[in-house]
Length: 494
Image (cartoon, rainbow, N blue to C red; front, top):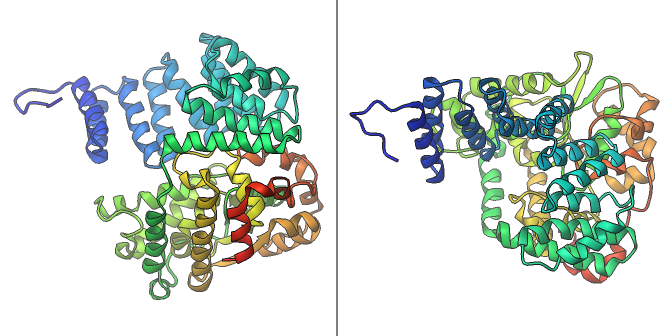
């Protein structure tokens, strides 16, 4: 729609204009239109939800959650807004807030499949598989087409009987719905793996990844190389030398980085079992701050990371303070260290090195044959298109290693490499090394990490609720005949 200059546009006109601009890809224009709609009518949830959608698309998840909170304040009876807010709470680790919102939705709409599904995910996060299974089954009863619930149920096969779901998935996996094939393939593969039907499990994973690649598109290796090259070129040794002494002096932040499935959750769970350490989970805060850096200059151009050389000391200092303030909201005041274990934060270590120069970086590594295959079995978000093909996983691994080596060489950050295999082989030795690195005194409780009842949102949620076990080492051998690209990468070592 076009708002005529001679007319006085209403809140609805500005909301419709925001939708139009969003569909056209005009992020800044849509933001402005939604905000104008809110100024004219702050009691309407819709523009707040539009803002949240834009912010989520820009990886500004905390800001999006606040917009959804405002949507609920504006319209308390809007169950769609409440459901989106519950999901935002859950995704960002606010367990109690999420539980409250889901229950509010279900009190008014007991048959909401989406709310029951969200509850199931929440119960998985806090380690209650029976409750999770019950919620997923209620979701399926309410809406038999809820493939996410069926897929997640299949993934609980280690903890509950999913025989009926396996039979159902066998039929539905052969349909034409690519989204359903992707969702069910991952869950079906896990259920078959539990039954040691390894070739059939790999076939299911292959179906899932092929279907998701149809949805998300193929991995762009050239664009990936350009991104790595840009990071290395922009964040040079000279860049860091010229900015020594900048940033917030806090030594509270600890970042755990690496590839997904490399042991980051296990490492966090060990450290977070120390009474003076808080495990915050996989936070989006650093990504939010990085992508939002152009706003500090009052312009969208150039975007991050190309704007980094243009940021002043005051900008970087503010980023460091803002990070500390945001993550500090989650942690008790007694926590000397706060752990952010978003693995892909390795992309943002250039920002960390200037804005939080005293942060500690724990870099998790794992045999690419095990790590890569585990990635292949997980339903990651569409942005991680590299995870749907074994050759692309190996390619991504090489580029990530090149970038990590660059940070280690020029950033000045304190970086500790922690091998998953070493942790499994010698838990106490690695635990002592980790605590010494983050300068916390030894505490025996870290060896009982599996008894920690904190919420865990990653696919490793069930493994870290058990004592250390060896079966995840060299798991790739059960699938060896299918893993040639990963085996070649491991043998080449580059």
